[in-house]
Length: 157
Image (tube, rainbow, N blue to C red; front, side, top):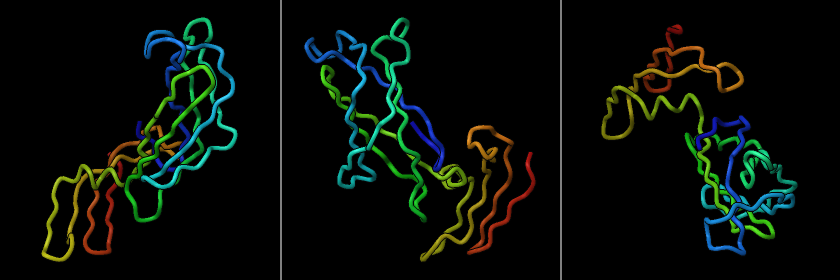
C-alpha cells in the first residue's frame, strides 16, 4: 500500500491459524499482537501499543486492521519503504509493506519531460495532483516546472 507522508491508514491482513496447514483456516478472536517495524532496511524496532482490531468476528472473522503509527518521510527522500512483522499466539506471522511518499513527489515519477546535462537535472515539467489537507481528497491537477532551484506552478484545472 502507498501512504502519503503524515497521513494515517489502516493496513488489513488475514490471520491464519498456526495449528493448521498454512492458509487453510483463519484465526478469529485474537487480541494481543507483537509488531516490529523496519524502515528502509533499518534495524527493526518494536511498535509500542499497536492498534489492531478484527474487522468483524461475524462477517470477516480472522481479518484484522492494523493502524500503524503515522510515518513522515526523511527530508530529501521522495519515497520510503516500511515493513511490519505482526505476530500473535495462535497465528502464523504476517509481513506487511507500505510505501510512504511525498504527494508532490509523484510528479518526479510521472514527469512528462526531463532535460538533463552531464551534472544535474536542469528542467522538469509535468503535472502534479493537488490534495485537500486530508491527503485523500483530490482538488485537481496543476502544471509544474522546475528550473534549477526555481519552482513554478500554474493554477488548478
